[in-house]
Image (cartoon, rainbow, N blue to C red):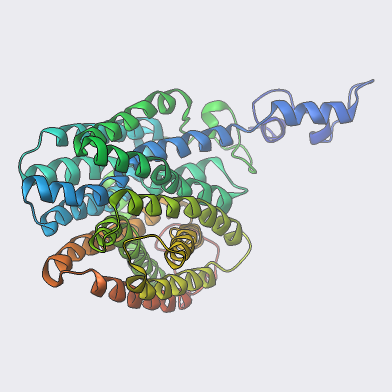
Length: 461
């Protein structure tokens, strides 16, 4: 590829003749540089931002199901007589598969392309949500919610965001990571109040159908607009130079396991996996699954509790995007330590805030927790990228697997604790202590002293 081609791609961002004002070439006689520059800004929005927007919408559609479990624990318990532990087990299977699928999905995207993998994943979510409408036994809940939806949502997990970000962006990676991470919270913001209203007014089955339709609606956008690689459109990644599209990576499963084995020989991997497991335990496993039934135990209506959870989504968007901005500027380790410490403190106060009505201290908790919800993702991904280079998306997939395993454990044990103790208080206190441990773990992750290379390279210390 000649230098002229590279410059054209970088300047134009769309394969068209580059603007002289950006390439150093002299302007044609009579050209107005101000007019040319203004026209360039208007017509040349880099395709990477369109891909990021489609990814954002896709994650929203796939995340619709994540709004359901906390809303359906009580209705399923009432209709079928299943214990909260049984229902929690189905949710834990979904969360575990969500995490364990992610690293393989990242490798499959390298092999078959992002678009194909995501379309199949959306189909699996829709199939699981629809099939659950006709279930009559708890084992069916395990299959539909646990297996199908877990595999589908896992293929659109944060490893999907990492793959898109790594391929399409060189500049603004932290910011884009924050924005795409916030997509899950945006889905929660959209679907939680809607699903809560549907469950209260029409029952849980129409809510499940709504989730299935949300997944299917996104499919055309993915198929038409989600390019696999900048080179497919003749572009350079945003802020980078043009590189040809690599050949499909064969042996996706083998590569995924090799990256895991190499990364597992390094200390930072276990620290990142441990902190992220606690992150999952204290968010998806705890708040997302058990906040609504816990608030209902204290007399709060389900719709009110679900609305509070949706408000968490509002501030999650703000906090995650801001965290991405901070990650581009400050030490990711210190950011993680602060995030986990503040989260742990807030959880210790939560049992004292539960009441039949929403009051100002509870609103303060919701705002505070929302800002911190997945603010941990941008610095965690940045540390994966720093330590493991070109394999960072797959490594992050394994770190995400630990996040979901932590969530799965608490989703199950939280239900068991409620059955045994008649209260969630012990779960809140234990999670607060775990967050304090995560803060300490983040501080001892050491910097990589040599340039990033393949996964498994030597790590300082």
